[in-house]
Length: 229
Length: 229
Image (cartoon, rainbow over all chains, first blue to last red; front, top):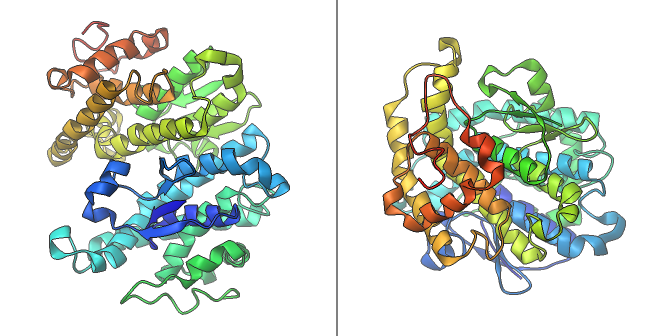
């Protein structure tokens, strides 16, 4: 399998985590979606990440489609380590949380911070590169608190985010949080339950690859790869 | 079942179409998400539509979670009229298109036009009501052409949008297009294949409810409910 991804893209990280949990070791190809490379746009006209070239050489586009595809094709072999619960209502809750962390948190917070602080370092001036826009940073940062509070509430009320068992929802949240944590944007002291949950998530073997990611000219926050903070 | 929806919300319309195709007649409750009604925010902290109160009285949140839930619980009884294909790769393509029409088209076009032209009529001044912002309208309208061109390309290349069979992807696209068509925002003359596809989609019995929707002070485009345009 071949995964088109970017190291500072939460939906890409979610799929890398999923693949590792399912025991798959895809080839990783870093893609700069802002460059709108013609071969990539043919695979995904939306020009978004991630895109997985799966078993049959066919492109599977987007975190939602990929996670359902992997659950359908690999889930049953996982038995009690399956990342989607057995009942339809519990599955609906997992999907709600994937949508929360990879669509809502992404739109309110993660996408803007990744673009302003990372992508703009990698873009040419013609592509929109340059200094971060401080108004955009301010707006995104003012949204982080609400998202961290909700994460804290979930972590406090449940064993894992969607209930008793570890699921895809924990990976989706972990992917988003890991991007923000790389950038040093999270005030962990104010959300101890979220901190304890994240410490458990990032200790999973599937997280190892993410914790060694490095962006040129932008080292991670000092505690980023520290499993006990 | 009880569906919290808004008549000019594409994801809400998608779920109304799905429920009708599955033979379900839910009670409909119009919700104004901008009002952030406390009881509604408790059902869905994201404050977004649609939310379905399903079989067990439990809230199922968001178009993605609801469509998978309905396929899991009702799909098998639909036999060859099932709205999701049988193979995992074909299902991935349906999910890519749902994401295109209900996330990308929504973010690029539909959400802004619905907000500026409809929601602002229903909002109080304190909620942000008032005249549409012409810069926002202009940006959304300049994106429509690309989205209609892609729809036209799909309609020309395939029998239905995801392939040979009618699927959820046609309902997702139909929901988005029907909102834009209500508002008279679509230049049908320039996309004949999309027009022919939409004429087939809106002739389905499940579309009847949508075609009789009316927003106070904003009648639909004259051809809106005309099955042959």
